[in-house]
Length: 231
Image (tube, rainbow, N blue to C red; front, side, top):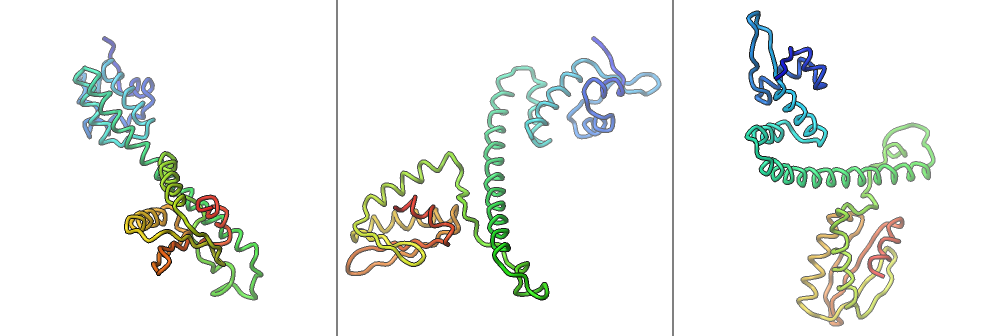
């Protein structure tokens, strides 16, 4: 079995010597053997371990998760490592998708603000009331994860299929349904969930002698989304 000084291990693994020493301090690398002069000496297993750590870091895993995987990897069998890695990657994918949704929403807010600025005449002085003082508005974007959108669309399609009357309003539309407690419950549940991912929508439910009304309102640049979803 080969042996390596820390400088050689750093060159072969791609990790800086300071990183290797840190990994030893947190337990990712076991304490190495020492020469009589006190120099660290590493073997091929340490190099393989660092290769495993490097791949885990490329996946964006946290050091605590990597330490858990390394402990399983050290035991030998692959199955436990693969099973735990699968769970960690599923969590990582969900986290990344959530971050992307947040970033997409923020980008839509900035784009909306940019468009608003372009339509505002600059004031004599920059301050309260000028275009630069405009606040971020709700983004015209759906932050619902892509893999959940088909189910949400199907739910709305089923509800809209029960509409008995539809009328336009200045800021959206009103949909009338037959008076049915189950319909009211379903509409309320969907409206709450839709407002969470499409904050530019606002919903109002009223009940009168003609039935149940769902009023859906959206800003002008959200009307196309409204019409596509509710007809």
